[in-house]
Length: 149
Image (tube, rainbow, N blue to C red; front, side, top):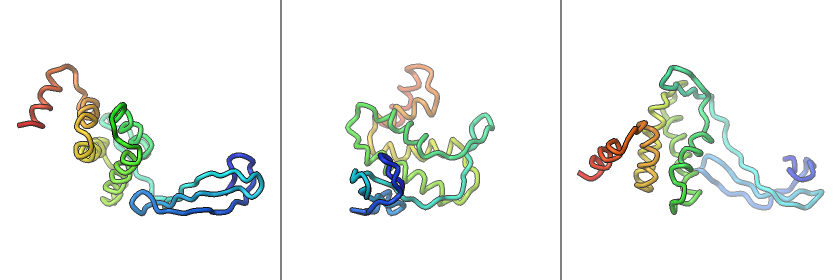
């Protein structure tokens, strides 16, 4: 593994641990040349999944795009980053389990909402407001009413 500080290829592994519900391994490494430490993440390369947008466009599935959307929803909330990464991993696993080459953005959004609702109601409402394209306060009121019958 190439050192991000000096570029030397040789490093030693100091610690390894399983992450993302067993879907990855985080390794703590030390460069043999400059002695600086860095982390790497190993993950099984999945087959390419295409996301079909509402306007018909297709783009490659991006776990980072899902993560950014969730981070916006949990901003200034007491949701740890490890939980955000856990939700992203669960969403990705749910989609991969369906073994489809294409999945709609609608399906991804619903899956994220499912996990956010269990995590933080305010973050769920924020994400839902973008997902359902709320236009005014009445849209929020309707969704809140559905949440609390």
